[in-house]
Amino acid sequence: MTEIIYTLDGGTYFNITNKCPCNCAFCIRTKGDAVGSAKRLWFDKEPDFEEIKSAIDAYDFSEVESAVFCGYGEPTCALDNLIKSAKYVKALKPGIKLRLNTNGLSDLINSRPTAKEICAVIDIISVSLNETDSDKYDKITRNIYPGRAFDAMLKFTADCVKEGNEVRMTVVDVISKEEIEKSRKICEDLGAKFIVRSFERGR
Image 1: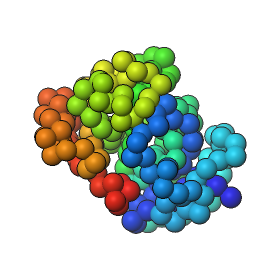
Image 2: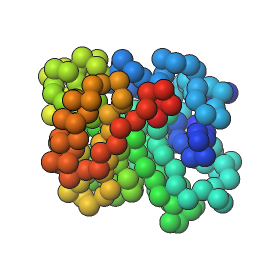
Image 3: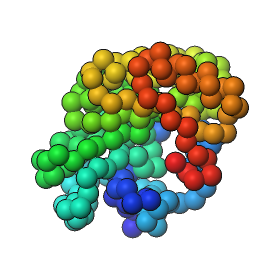
């Protein structure tokens, strides 16, 4: 059975879709069928909200102070379910901190600005920066919006910062130290926190 909720290094994660407009060269999905406590994160059929709700109801959130939307897909590909799920969890567990790990392409995916509605229910937005210019970004992410994705990701990040949420940008340590420092500058100029993720650790 495919897990909708799983744990990794003590954290709680929501796997709500397998859809993604990217096929990143470093994607953890290429390393196996699951991570953490999950035995399988690939869906035979995309879950609807009732299935996600049932998984939430069955999970013990009593000791959970924070949770992350980040599974084997881009959560904003299931934007309605993301928003509904976040609202439902917060109603069940007031005070819980919710984070979204995203490629930042939600506006392209959903054909409209989305930062405001996402930031209304998600406390922390973590955007994968990945590279320092459009051409390099397209090469490493192999996204379906070549020439447009990089700028859209930056705009989404800036929009989230304007909403006043905690916003992070991340890169994976498969790029050079020089590119990491260039990424840091991009991130800081946007007003976001900068994080370097470990490829070996898968996060």
